[in-house]
Amino acid sequence: MMKKRSGFAVMAKLIGLVKPLLGFMVLAVTMGVIGHLCASFITIFGAFSIAKLLNIDIPLTLGAMFISIGIFSVVRGVLRYAEQACNHYIAFKLLALIRDKVFAALRKLCPAKLDGKDKGNLISVITSDIELLEVFYAHTISPVIIAVIFSAVMTVFIASFNVWLAVITLAAYFTVGAVIPIMTSKLSRDDGIKFRTKSGELSSFVLDSLRGLFETLQFSQGEKRLGQINERTDSLSKDEYRLKLTEGSNRAVTNTVILVFDVLMLFAAATLYQLGAVGFIGVLIPTIALMSSFGPVVALANLGSTLQNTFAAGNRVLDILEETPAVEEVDKKDKADIAFDGARVDNVTFSYGGEKILDNVSLKIPRGSVVGISGRSGSGKSTLLKLIMRFWDVQSGEVKISDVNVANINTSNLRDMQSFVTQQTHLFHDSIKNNLLIAKADADDEEIQSACKKASVHDFIMSLPNGYDTNVGELGDTLSGGERQRLGLARAFLHNAPLMLLDEPTSNLDSLNEAVILKALKKERKSKTVVLVSHRKSTMRIVDSVYSVENGRMS
Image (cartoon, rainbow, N blue to C red; front, top):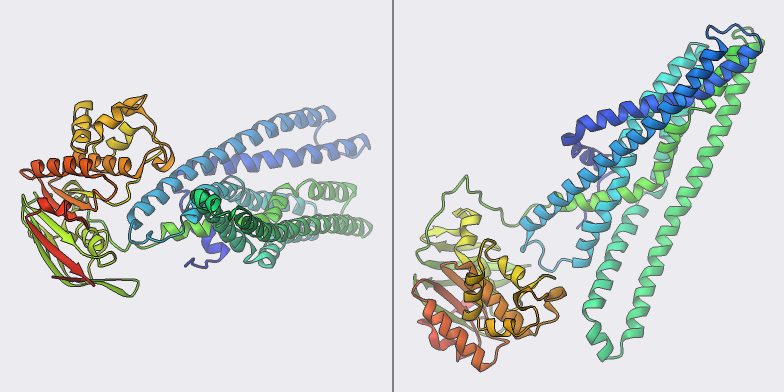
């Protein structure tokens, strides 16, 4: 469930991430303020030059003013480039930092908080939502600060001619830079969140459609699926149209308000001139100064509509960063490593989503033994292995390794002691060798080949054109289910953990490959403890003891 945060709350949290790059932010603001002042004073000095030509007494010579205009022009160009470079450096550094934080958060949330999550939506957050934050970091934070400082300087400058003209100036800046963006933001309110949410849902639907393309073609559902994609796309387009309409209206209102304040300034200055409160310079310079100084506040006015989309993206990113893990990892600093000396489950009860999966389950896993767990599908066998892995915490009872509750073992040590092979082996879009090295990053070729021989997959790999350097394709699509499963077993052998948790490790294998793998497991029992979940009676021939799970209870 997405938290609903105000734009200011999202902005405050996003700004908090800027701390590591605060020095660059100060530099960008300084260059931005000086650059905008140079841009405005090009016009202002041009007005002074006109006054000089009209024989009005000006302290500077005409030549000095033209030289100053030239200097302002060059400095403005250099500082504008430097400011933008600095802002984008900050933005892209922070996007990298946020991606790192998001992946770290997802790792902590997995698997308990991510089971059943909409993967397409997560991909949308990781890619497009984080990218949208570039608008905030490169075009929002420093422009806001620049606009405030610049407006203050220009107001003081115009106040040197007349206080009432300064009041008009301040009102103009405040209306364009604050009132308009706030009103626009309120008008568009939830449009940005709706757009980002629907965008994520569309990404998820397209991803789901691509994964199920074979089934869609097989049952002639292509037109129906395409119609559903078009329907979602049209709905998303309508939301985007509303956002663009708000943005266009915002720009029109901004330009109208600027024109009104320009006319008001001219009228006020002319009135003061008639009353003798200011001279001709007091009419010319403040009017020209105001007309040439709306750049920074216009940038803020334009943010009113575009930021709704950005804040919606930021809200979704913050949801991940602030999500509380269901299982808190234990740091190595808090708990020392332990050696594996058997495991056991004592009176464990576990419920998921309000449904009781396991009820008062107990089993012993002596060191060096092969323990079998059988039972019908959905009886809780796989869940039991995940509790031993501490993917979830139990509601009651204890899961212990070496007579220590798994909740009190540092997570790194726990993972080192366990190898877990599931029914579905995930393979990354990479070479077979790199997919195996996930289990042990520093493994040499001899170790990799030995693990693959135990998993009865070495000969198959060597039959491929590029051997271990063969790319397996996205999600391992170039391999059969049995080949993927054997690579999963090879990973487990390569990891070389003392406790192997195998969930239906031979379900996709023929009898010959099953026999080879069971022989390897039997041979490994001297240095390994194996928990084997399987429906197959042939697989259970190598176990020392069998526990049967039925309806969440052990028998």
